[in-house]
Structures are given as structure tokens and as C-alpha cells.
Amino acid sequence: MVGGNGAISASATSGLVVVYVTTSPDVCTLGGVNNSTVTGVKGGTCTITAAQPGNVNYLAAASATQSFTVGLGRQTITFGAAPNLEAQGTATVTAGGGTSGNPVLFSSLTPNACSVSGTNGSTVTGGFLPGACTIAANQAGLDGYYSAAPQMTQNLVVTPKSQLSVVIQTVPSGLNFTVTDSDGTNSYTAPHLFAWVPGSTHTVTAASTQPGITGVRYLFTNWSDGGAMTHALIAPAASATYTAAFATQYQLTATTGGHGTAIPAQQWYNAGAYATILATPASGYVFSAWTLTGGSGAITNPAAAATSVAMNGPTVVNGAMAQLAPANLSATIVTGNKSGIIGGIRVWPISIRNTGSAAADGVTLNGVTLSASGACKPTVTTDSLLPLAYGTIASPGSVTHTIQVNFAKCPSLTKFTVTVSYVAAGGIAGANSFTGVTQ
Image (cartoon, rainbow, N blue to C red; front, side, top):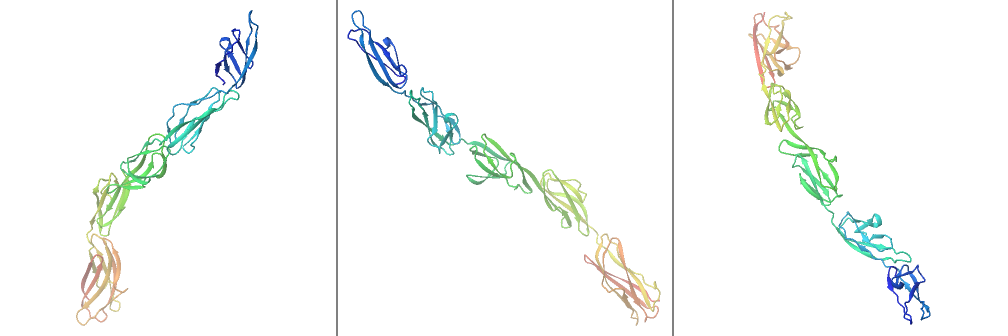
């Protein structure tokens, strides 16, 4: 066969040395002692001629020939050491071949488990799942010289893809988040360590708000990778940490003890912010001062109804109100002949005055009554029907109403008494009487 060699032998009856010559030097060559070693160089028929030229004692012998077939050279493929191969990972296979000069070509006999690419198919890529991968190696022959090498195979074990460490944490620490992936949807408390396969997809969600201790909550602001509150994470090729940041908020509660209104009554503020508060007293009250009744906030100006609070923590403030002195109503009447005699009619003004410290609301003139001595029966008329509502009388302040008294049938020097009655909100009620004598 090509590349092989062997010895040839022939003898003459004279006992003289036989000389060999190839008549097909493209198929075989001769060498060695007396050219007695034949080497195949190409597939085909090799013809060797043996001659013995004789000597002084012997004539030359007649030439003799012998032919034989030189077969094609054989090639053998030898694999290198089997590489490690992970699912979705890559590895390089190697193999040495015969002397034809043709490359060794690789292919996958298990395409679901692995595939080949790159130079001569030497790069092997593992499938998505672990399993068995079989790689075939082939080498073509060289026409007339070498036959194709027998196919050789190498078995590779596709191992599970290596997992890497991924940490999800929150600032502040200890808050919750959820992850949705092939394991379903699960809730975790940060920080939490995961072992994820590179390239795998995991959807992370941070709640918009999370409760803390009483008066404290946490408001989502951002993920460290710039993703939305809910977004997909593709596990990277190296260990990584992802952080969900939250703003700390404190609750402000403002009260007035039921004697007014506080704005806002309850609100959330970022830690360190200043909250504006306003206390408005109810009727009959005046603002006194803000006091801190719970938490750790700081009131900027406690004496001002409108001020601010530094939100250093959950805060409860109370706007204290002082009760004003109640309204004090009294009625006076100017009797006599102030407007002259009009057919026995007197025109008198009635004044209801508030001398208290607070305004009087819902003031109403309930009635005016008049009594006289003897047979005199004076009558009272007004310019509107009673009761007569005045509304609010400020402090101090007064309202005036005019009445007419008809003394037409009463003699002079008749003694009379006028009584004025009134009421106001808050249970205020009173009456004042005035005595006089007709002229």
C-alpha cells in the first residue's frame, strides 16, 4: 500500500547477485541493498524487473518480471482529550488525522444536545438542557494515494450550566420584593441571594409603597439598573447585585382638640422635609400654641397658627385653642318725648349692646312688652314683626331698633314699664326693663 514497503527476492542458477529495476516508478520505488526494498508511492500496479548480467563464467540470465498491486494508504483519526461542555456553553474539540493533508472535519450526531460551528466544526455548543453529545470526525482521502479515514466519534457530557450569585437588596434593608420566573411568583425579604443561570430571565417587582413601624412608610424610587418598578432581569455572565431604593416617609397628624381645624389633618412627608401646618380656631376660641404630642418632629414657630414642622420622624402636633369670654348682651331704651308727640305716640330707640369678649351670634329681639298703671292700656308697634333677627353683634358692638308706643288714651303722668327680651347662640338669653312716666 502507499507508504508501505517490503523486500523482494530472486535468485539465479549461477548464484550471482540479481539486480532489480522498477518499470513503474510512479507507483513504486526501489531502494536498499541491490534495490531489494520496494516502497509504494501511489495506488496502482507495480512491476519489478529482475536481471542477472552474468560474468566470465556465466551468460546473462534472461530478465524476469513480477507485478503486484499497491493499495491506497490508510488514514487514522485520533481525538484529543474530551473537553468539558456546559449547557449553552462552548468547547473546542481536537483530532489528528492521516497524511493526506486533508483537514479533519467535525459534525454533531446529536443535534438536540449539541451543535458545531467555527473552523472545520471544531467549536461545540451545548444545548439548552444537560445530556449526551456525540461528535463525529471524518477525513477525506487523496485520490490515488489515500483512502478516507474511518469515522471516529467522541462522546461529551453536557453538564448543567454553571449558576452564579445574584443579590437583590433594598435601601433601606429589610423591605420586600417579588420575583417571577420558572419557579413561579415568590416574595422575598431583602437582601436575598439567588443562584441563577447566566442568560435566564427573572421579572422583579418592588411595591410602590411598603409599611414600616407606625407612622413610617417607604416609597419606591428606582432600581439600580434603571429598570421600572416591575421589569425583567437577564441574569448576567458574572455575579451581580441589584438594589431597589426607597424614600422614607413619615406621617404627620395635626389636631386642635375639637376647638377648630388643622390643615392638614394627616399627611405623609419625605424624611427631613418641612410640612406646613395651619390651625383655625372655632367660633369662641382663639389660637394659643402648637405643641408636639407625639413623635420626633420639630415645630418651627409654636406660637404661630401658620408654621412648619421638620419631619424628623412620625409626628403628632396639637394646635391648642383658648376659649374666649362669652358674649355679654344688654338692652337699653331711650324713653320720653325724643321724637315729639304724634297723636299720643312716642317713638323710642332700643339698643342691644354686646360688651363681652366674644362676638354674639344669632342675636334675636324676641319681644317688647309695656304695662302702665291705672286704666291706661298703651300699645306697642314696631316697624317689623317680632321676633327680629339681628345675626351677629361684634365685640364690642350694638344694634338699634325703633318702636312706637301709643299713649293716646292715657292721662299725663301715667307710670309705665317697658321690657325688652332677647336671645343669642350659646344659650344666651336676657331681658331688660325700663320705667318711665308719660308727659
